[in-house]
Image 1 (cartoon, rainbow, N blue to C red):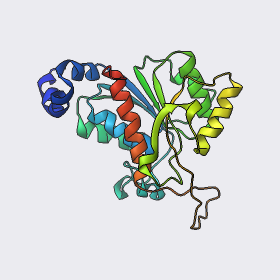
Image 2: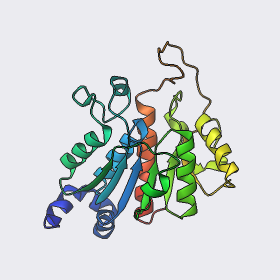
Image 3: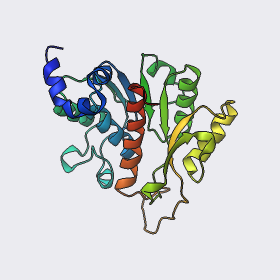
Image 4: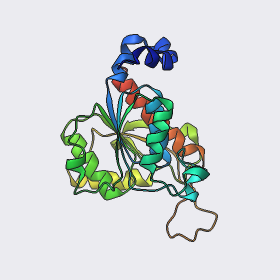
Length: 240
């Protein structure tokens, strides 16, 4: 891109830390982020600000007022707007030269193979639909596509309990427990890197008029998403 010099100025603090060549490697990398909620939104933010050149984003949802307590894409001015559109504009405001491919659609077990046929250097799975999540992990695992899967951030309180390890070692996380079971049915018991909180979950203490909606604090999804992005960036620069 003609604005190469501007790119390296924009991300000069990153270049100081990791070097010019690895920053250039990030520029040439393609990352896919599946899900732009509390976890995926922060992962997206960090991936964009790392200087990744091409990003695919997939999410079916619009910004809701209840997202404002924990989702970086949720503000009063973005209510009712598809999350992929909000993310696209935010990324362009951070780095005008970034290439964004956006898909405003629901990931399902039936469309995983079509959605993830493109070449990705890394995928961050931040979806919470169990069936879709298991199908996505199975596909990425079978095709040796580098990825990290984000488990649940709801009902967790302790940021220092965050861990990144194989899913076979995960404990306490209800989502990880269900995903492990689904993967075992597919003969996958290890080889899935995930990020999770290693702590007992607390009970909801307030009332919600929406059935089975878990409580969540402002900082926990962000910490998980940033950790997932950090793992991806270290992988792309040869640190993992």
